[in-house]
Image (tube, rainbow, N blue to C red):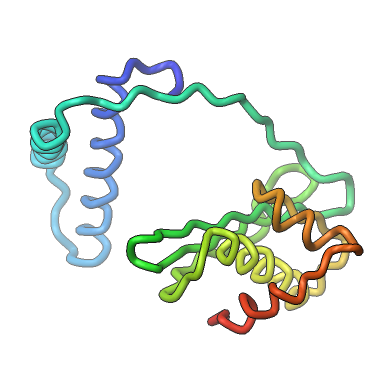
Length: 172
C-alpha cells in the first residue's frame, strides 16, 4: 500500500470496503454476489466522498517497523486500543502468536464507555493478560505501541493505582 499513488490507494481502499460489504451480504442476508455492482458501488462511493472532501490528504511517511517472533517456547501478545473522543467509545484487540509467528488466538471487543486512549490501551493489556491466565500461558511477552502504559506497568517505582479506575470500567 505504501508504494501506491494516492489516487490508486483510495480506489483500493474503497474496493476493500465493497468486498467487505458484499461478504456481509453473503453471510448475513444470503444475497448473491454481484462483482459489477460491487465495483460500481465502490467507485460511486469514492466519487461522492471526493465531492464532499475535494482535497486528498497526503500520506504520512512513517518509519517502518518489523514484527519479531517471540523466543522459543514463548508467546507474544500484541495489543492495541482505539478511542473515539467524539462518541466516547473504543475498541481493543489482542493477537497471540507463537515462536513461528502463527496466530494462536485473537480477540477484539467494542467498549461502549471509553474514557481515553490510555484507558483503551490498559484495557487491551488487561484483556491479553486475562486470556493468558485463562489459557494457562505463563511464558508470554506483551507488546504494545503505548509506551506510557507499558512504562507505568513495568517500572516498580510508578504508582499505578490510577489504573484501577480503568479496570473497574471493564466489561470482560
